[in-house]
Length: 390
Image 1 (cartoon, one colour):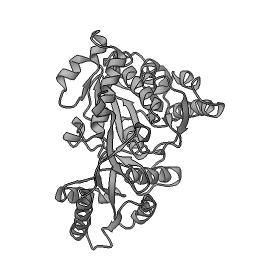
Image 2 (cartoon, one colour):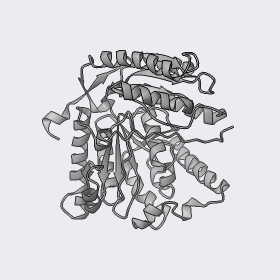
Image 3 (cartoon, rainbow, N blue to C red):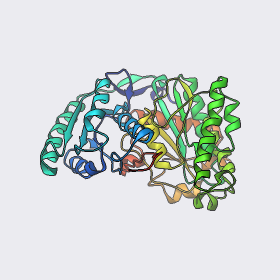
Image 4 (cartoon, helix red, strand yellow):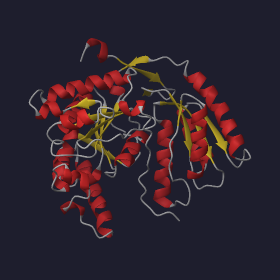
């Protein structure tokens, strides 16, 4: 890395964390409020939101996981302040979400469609509050921070036969570099680690973590078996098959290389923030948007996303650096992909050399460079539902 890009710049938050973006988030806690939230973002520059179908008729662990995800999105260091927008009669009450978010010390306000007398008056009130937050946010100054304060999420989607040879091991090299500098790297996609679990269990820091590896793998497999599918012996994605992968285990062996070679420190549940530095496994599904949302809610400030087939995926609050596994796809989808790791396949660069390029891109992104997904406003959001809607 150049001397310039060794220094990261971000926004220091009241709770001590550092964000690399300064968003004002309009957070709809119920699907009924998402269109209203969208209208507010159209009126007020500097705000972001997301469309979803959650927030009501949820119970038990499913309710708790959705609640945790809402809070995690608002608490993410990339968010300066939050306007929590509710309907009023939903299960996930806006006031409850706001109460948790206020513990971070950041600006948090609540707006309710029913309390404000309808959609139009709510849009007006929400926009007024958001405009003030954006102006306050614009006065924040970037300050230097260290790699030890960075949480980097990793994922792969639309894999091909090159994924496990180029982009994924290059991201693994970055993961090791982040860990060496005292930071945190999140490995996700439990579904796509089936068949490689023994490799990660062997790297666990203790027996408890090793046992947790097998517990989360077995739980994921059992969910599929209850629906009459044995996913270990098959491959549920047509795109992966067309990309040259014959089985889920083959994909898993390639996907696991994103973890590099560092010891596995802990396993956290979906949308939970890591409690330890180093390599951390978050239990998420393989669904690209749901796992990306989980890592964002878990505090990741930036995500490294590899693909062999190509994808426009991004997050409303977390810069998502897209890395191509092959040069042909990179050339055809340059508007979506940020870095080409296909040079490894062609023998032009080593895995470490591409890893260094990716790390440099992380530093530039922390200093304000926008990713392709950010430029295209690819504000994807989806929560891993673990229970039915009632």
